[in-house]
Image (cartoon, rainbow, N blue to C red):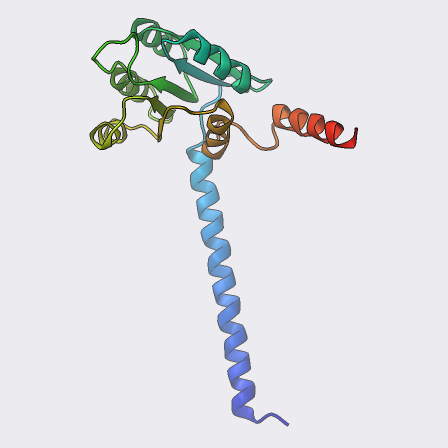
Amino acid sequence: MPDALALKGIYFGAEFAWTIAQAIQTIRHILACISRKRRAPMNSSGTRRILLVDDEDAILLAFSKVLSGPTVEIDSASTLEDAKRLLGERVYAAVIADLRMSGAAIMDGFVVISEAKKRNPATKIIVITAYGGNHTKDKVFSLGADMYLEKPVSPGNVKEILESMGVYRPDSPENRSAESTDEQRRSE
């Protein structure tokens, strides 16, 4: 038969475990509240808008095709001027920008990041470049970018990153339709 001291130890151990479980639950609740506040902005129709900025039409087309869906609208800009105009006209949940457009030595993407954050600090920004380095990466993050990627980058990977940022939701209609299509292919 266990002695009283052993029973007390079991009781206090269980009480301690219960306290830890409550603390974890509280922390999860706080983190959920924070992530809701930082969720990517939606327009009045309940869709999220993404701006793609790149001087290569093939990249704009590939990313548009993969990223568009029932709850996501895509705008494209191939020049800095177009990007600034669109940023002034609309609110974007995310901006995906190439740093160096039109072969210029100037990295136009820095201006895109600054303009996007100035107009809406909640906008998620992904920077994609073929001309990277630690100095460039540091500057990108200091301007407010959320993610820095070096080319080549697949549109599918960018979509996963956008999902983790809250621009796409796993339970959104475009994800459900993609999952059902995958299930249909597997069953055939």
